[in-house]
Image (cartoon, helix red, strand yellow):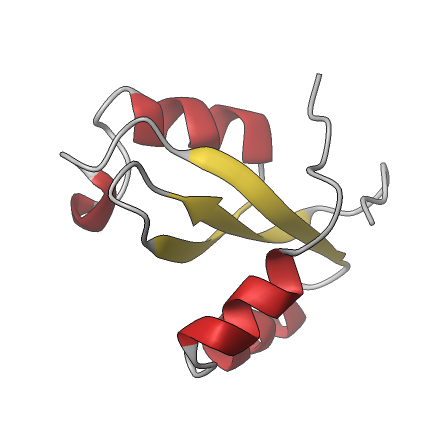
Length: 91
């Protein structure tokens, strides 16, 4: 579900404490590294390692931010359904 021409991404991480974290970025590979290095969001510090389990692409920041908000409003069960699929390859 990644578009090489897209500039904006919404991602979901599975944290080491079995929680899910949703965020926005323009560079998913860098952002996952930052989370795992303890330089990401305050929420993920101490919950590493994190694993990227869902990634969506958007042409505009506004669309991505709207989707990030929508995902954050989902229940845990709904988020688990969302991430139940192949893990994106960022390499």
